[in-house]
Length: 239
Length: 103
Image 1 (tube, rainbow over the protein chains, first blue to last red):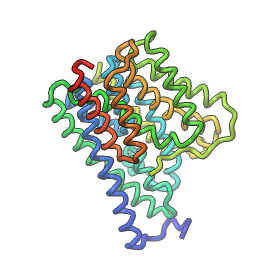
Image 2: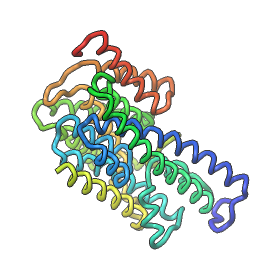
Image 3: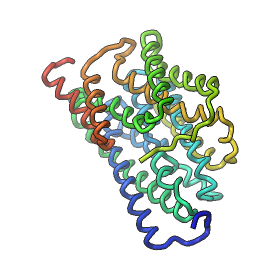
Image 4: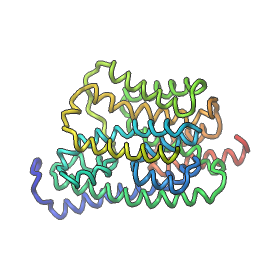
């Protein structure tokens, strides 16, 4: 059945894909609650927090944006870090476009749903119909729940008082590590991760908050341009 | 200023997604593009972990956040889901601060 893009999906296969996609979508959407709480703890308003989830809608960039804000960094540093992390979705889109085959206004609409989870649930499908079901089901489920739980987390976070009492500042580090973890199975990525962390900490005493992370991003750029290893398989989120 | 940053970064992130689904896929075939695109999230996330946990303004410190990170590592090694990892990191730091106020 591979390479039969126009064939209809068997009901059993469709059900299996929808069930898996809903599972991933619900699990991911729920952790919007941690983003909402962390964001108001960083000093953003409930409205600003919800705007990030609606418009930016890509978890790592959102956590990065509020993480820089929490550290007292300039909003511009937060925005640049968020954008650099967002380039990952461009890569996903390049892989997904020929598979999903959306055109015109539909392409503009589904672009917002291009995130780690929707990519992981569609990029391995063997037909266009299956890929579309996985992508749209996961993307819409995450979008709806992520925004709902962002609001819940932000409102709750506003009610609880000093966020440090609840360890919310430590939650951010845990969140970034959990996002990074699946990529550390690659030895080259482990080296890059250690170097980036060391460089970032090294420049903390001499730069404004938010800048160390951007410097580390520059290290990745340099490493990518200068190393001459054979091109590896582009990393996609693993489940 | 914060709103300006939110809107510009948010809209920018949308256009990064739109560019991906609109550009011809041969853009990806350049090995440098592929490598850099692969390395950037790793470097940024690692730097964010380090700075979030060990920096306090422009000073390096070790406090309850480091214990939270260690607990997160244990949770990840036990293959805990995302929300559990985040909760474990927060709870560890919160408990330590309960015992050692001001840490």
